[in-house]
Image (cartoon, rainbow over all chains, first blue to last red; front, side, top):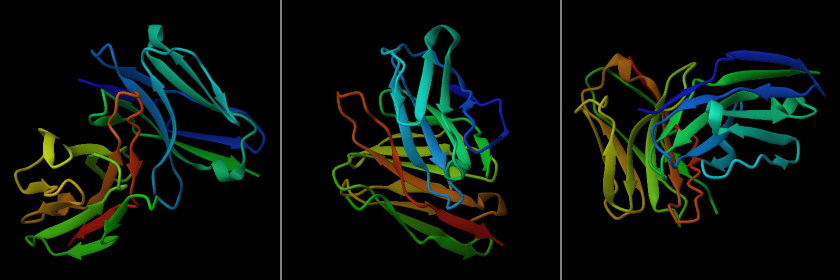
Length: 113
Length: 116
């Protein structure tokens, strides 16, 4: 069975600080996909980033970066120079070949001005 | 690209009544998913379709729940004999399953169900 754990329930930072959201996953599959989604107060889940299990290259996209480490089953997400608009609940999710996704319980990020 | 739409956005019903929700996915997407989300939790998988075929249904899903996607486009989720424990946000998502290794799901705004 698949499982996603987001140990941080809530994080609070001051604007312009960097913040890293942790995600640890469990799966028996050798091919799988990892995602981060953002759920702002308005409620609609928004896709942010995707990583395939066979590609461990870490990337940066604007203020977002991610660190995928297969050896520790972790897929951490960093926001650089946080802004108030980044305040939301962030979900890490795991999917096998486009089937169902298993989500963590989310990390609530509050960015204070 | 108009995104995923869901109707209604809110539904209040009395215990024991049947309710039906509709989801219209992104037009070129062949996969459609239903999830349920309660306060403080991540979305919980219910079922998903590829075109009109229902490929997987959660083992936790009661027989009171049924979903269809008759023409491979929109989908409906019906809950029969609603219970107070069914109160939740019901989310629909769609994706384009392909060999390109993408598979990210795009979510609709959800239908909030309250069972009184």
